[in-house]
Image (cartoon, rainbow over all chains, first blue to last red; front, top):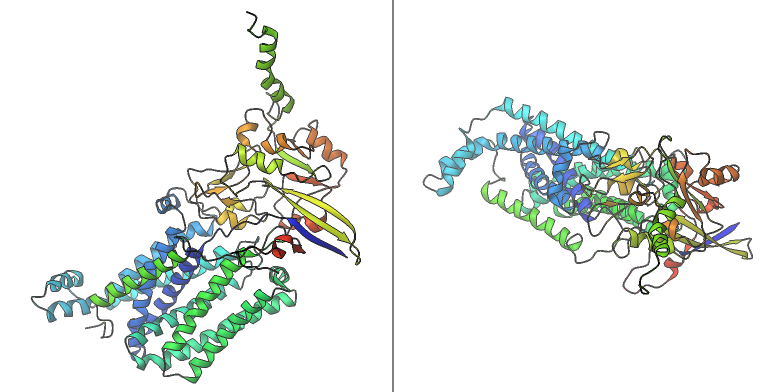
Length: 358
Length: 245
């Protein structure tokens, strides 16, 4: 039995910074929230209408914030042009650069088509007010074209599915990081995105006191936590039983680490607590919303920042520490600030707590 | 006239770079097949002095604290009584793989493999997304703090193209690094690999990336992620949280 001590080792710092966590968190929420908008705004399910309006708002706010975090991670935002000038179509990231505008373009069109009648109503209800002209221009006749809404929803749904697939596959294909290299990863991303989308929708509903949406949202939040727990258990079993070599290697690389044991316990514990709150207090929105959002964010933080701390070579771990710099704490605060600004802008201009269809 | 160097001394000094370049002879000879550059690292000759690490950093003007090549040092004990302590060195660099995992993931095709086997990054295309950094199984890549772009060992292609040896090879005190043309059976690297009679190995062979950096005397337990303790983990570093397994 040999024993080894690394006397002098070299570790690489995390290459994907908190920007990446923010992007994957926000774009996943946006895609999931878009799907939550469909029952009320496209399929005409009355019980979903209020929830779907808040979900559309969540999809827009998160969808518009996410690409900014992604561009910031390029160190020089203008470099994004190279994605379109020199695309390497063997790379999932290259495909992502096409899926993002498809999704966001579809989402903006879909939101506009949903809001057109409401914008026209606003233009008429506020004659003489300066904004009336803006509402009138934006409404562009205010026609409630259900066929157009459905077509835009189909395009956006395609974009949202592609966003969820590419974000999961982009990370999953990296064999060099066993923690990431599992076929369950895209499903885990989708499940946490669903939880985050529900959480953000519930948070927006809580802020605007739309408590009537609580039972439905809590049912779905509970379901998302069951799904998440099932997937985490499946990953653990696949590693412990040796079904997945990558999962087994990932578990082996952190075995004996009190920090990682606590992290896993934290993630599972927070999912169980979210589940318990959602079932125990079905008419309350805030706690379940915040817990669901916490779970979605924590999962990505642990996966990205924790995953990069595990050495590929040598023995030394290199944990990421938050610092008051633009690519760390200030970046996270800046993304939150942009998120808040877009939320305030959209909610100041359009009253989302009233029916979107005039 | 007395102060003027003699013509023979001047000629000697002028000819010196040509002589060293000639000795290095990695450049392709006219009419010979395309070279395929590779490196052989004889760990038995490495003394862990980090001359290669610093030589590379100087040659390639790397930012402080970032390295294209490093030498990790391990204390290996055998037996439960902690007897038979040995020190092992593992020089690491980009392996210029034949199946490089960094190339297909690059979203803009900035990473490419030259015909001579060298894997390079086109700085004009690179967007600094660090996808290649994640995909490399050997931690050979990093995002350069000065350029914000992917950086890695180039086998000192600017030197090799001029007929010189890579800086790490040139600076190696013990002659542990041998660089040359793997396509040439007469090259030193080919002769040394042949002489090793199959006792060469590569880092992380299970990665399937077919490295072109070969090792002699590399302990199997040290060719990838090392199960063991890190002195860095055991050292209290003020201001930096402890972590790891």
